[in-house]
Length: 179
Image (cartoon, rainbow, N blue to C red; front, side):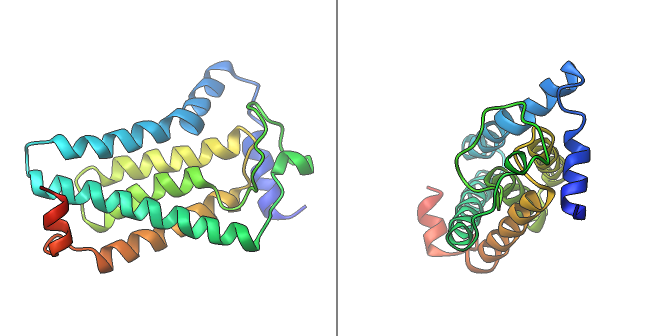
């Protein structure tokens, strides 16, 4: 068995054994993404450093969008089977119908975290911790391999780097959008 499957199986081996841990991991695997997106969207309404907060909210949205678009391109080339279909993991959630690689949940969480790290936002480490917990939870619940969430992190990083390079706070587009 390859290392990816071994690590995935090990992380998933705790699923279904501890109700409290299952509940925490289910939260991070399913609901945490919505809280992350809402927390970024809430920046739009902050009065402290309003222009910066709106710029960061738009930048995060662009990084997420680019990361997810990269995922869709990868899905056209790779159709990876889910770990539970190969007997590597057991599910504690409903089955998914789409391919396993890369993880969209990981992409969203890491795109926000990486963009904020690149912009040196004071909350970036909190978002990175949240992203790591989302990634771990996706493996724990049995729906992704380790490399699926690493692939999601990679597309998130690419999306974040592209936004950092091509979208800046002084651009005319940004000035129009933040008003």
